[in-house]
Each structure stands twice: as structure tokens, then as C-alpha cells.
Length: 98
Image 1 (cartoon, one colour):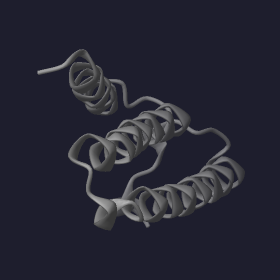
Image 2 (cartoon, helix red, strand yellow):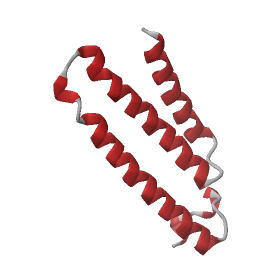
Image 3 (cartoon, helix red, strand yellow):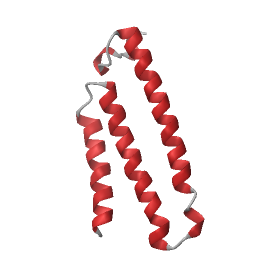
Image 4 (cartoon, helix red, strand yellow):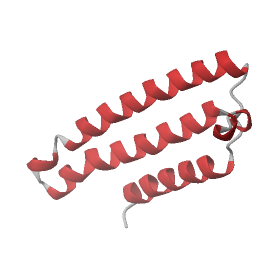
């Protein structure tokens, strides 16, 4: 395994661990999701270069598009939850109380 692959895997793993264990604020969960998407985007961007395959060059563009949509939706949820609940703590957001 090359150093480049190790950095992608470790970035994705640390982001998923951060998402699993540090779930106090919605903004920290969104940052962990964005770092996971960034690691996947960088891995998908270097994969066609390493394999010399031209058919997979559009995949990072699609991934970047979905990542931008996910970030916009997450920020809209952050603003909506802050307006309704007064904070972005995840323990205030209980779906069973609705």
C-alpha cells in the first residue's frame, strides 16, 4: 500500500470515528461528513490516473456535486434546528418528541 492510499484510508477512518464518537454538535457531525467526502473525492480523483482509465474521470465530478448538495442540506438543517431549538446540540433533536 502506498503512502497516498494510507493517507486516504486514515483520513476516512478518522472522520468516521469522529462522526461516531463526537456527536455533541450538529456542526461537528457535518464537518466529519465533509471530511469523509473530501477523502473519497481525492481517492476517486487519483484512481483514474493510477489505472490510466479514461472512463472513470467523470466520477469525481459527480461525487463533488453530491457533496455540495449534502453540504447545503446540512447547513439548512443546522439553521433550522438552531432557530427552532436555540442550539445545535444533537441531544435536543429527538424525533420521538415530534
